[in-house]
Image (cartoon, rainbow, N blue to C red; front, side, top):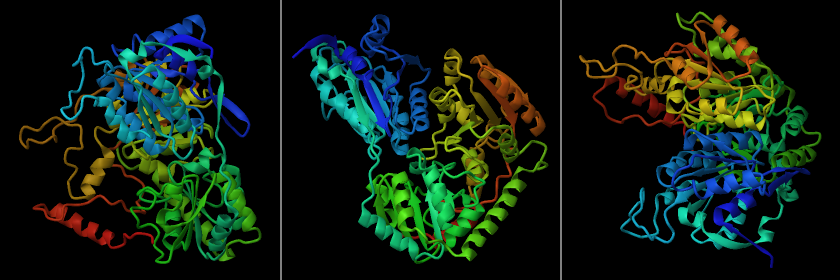
Length: 625
């Protein structure tokens, strides 16, 4: 057997450079590059290996320097989302805090079921110098390190304690990354001494490998059972999730809705699978869903879930489907999701499953009255949305006015990125997406700090699209460092920085739950009350963005915002458009509920009143059995 002598890190770099994914006959690099921040745990291991590869040309694996370890995972996840999970970056970090900084990113990736390869450096496998700098000394076992924290948030975890262990570990990592059912964060913990240790590797390990991402075919009997249930429906409803987008099922879904007349509601991940102005598109569903979608959900007798995991926001904490006899058909590549809510499961690729159902339901459609009801609700829904866009709410523009203007100035292929705060709720109701990649809202983990870093990954995934990061001051302050990365990589991203001097979403939630917006505003501490309810802090986030290398434009009104956005679109560099909005909204009217427990006993009248409302909502909550 022919071998080549390399360090473990050099072997891993060479291996990763030769991995490809394939679906529907189209191949692409599975690992297009490595994000990293070097420290004592990886600078002489993975760092040296990447340098050697770039210098000698022995492996094509570009290196990208991030400014925050969590941020580089977010950028990688955004890239994978834009590439329909067919490509995933690797991320390397130093031992200790550098590596554990990636844990939040790992949780986000796995919760969203998006692939990313994490390479946290680890303690010495030989234990020759125990305890080394940043080592966790656990009295329960000598083999426990801080990297064991990745186990809970990774779909696959392995610690490569000997060079030869890399062979099965690396192959297992690729298997999980390319599995639509199992994908998420994959973690290979790399002890720093093992990274630099040499071994005679079989050359065959470095051959070009193509990982075929198949489309699971639906079982005919399962199709017939699902079709039978759908044929019995008088008021069916489709809930389209992220699986509909990742499988490229948009055309099939649109044709299915047109043929059957079944209206299509969507989740955050599924928005854009059917264009917002399609006759059977009824908008987002659930806690922050649209009027039309939630009204249809109240009476739906059969719900066809396509590629959705039914989060509590989608079901409005198990209250949105009000029909006591509602039944579910779940088309999903993962059986975990296909059987939720006692559903009739159809385990298959979303596109193939829709096509199979279309054939089984050929000639069947909903009643003319139900089609008419859908049109009436959609028309009313658009009136509600248009009202939210109208100006004149107060001295500062409402966030909804800014979103209305943004809808107008961006083209259909522009990508809008958001994750946390009050904007996801507003966006689910108000964003008018026609393209399945136009709406990039991370709402499985809703991680503050995702947005700016995700802008990097989304732009790298498709440079031809305008990428617009929508971020509030709360999330911006969590993580804005990757603006520096945008600048250094020459990426043109537009960042809309909405400053309202507080947490608008949690403030409104706090008020609704009887907690009086306590601790949700950015204010000086008041010497009289002892609370953070003094004057507004003199924080200049626009100046901060400028100091990180971005061009900055200011907007004091909706008209100025429109003008600034036109300039930002024409720019060639990362540009921040800073606008102040009203902390108190108003937001679009709510049509759903979210289960956030309220104190059952309290000395505050506001809390007691809120609990009465909460208890009333709880009466409608139930398991779907």
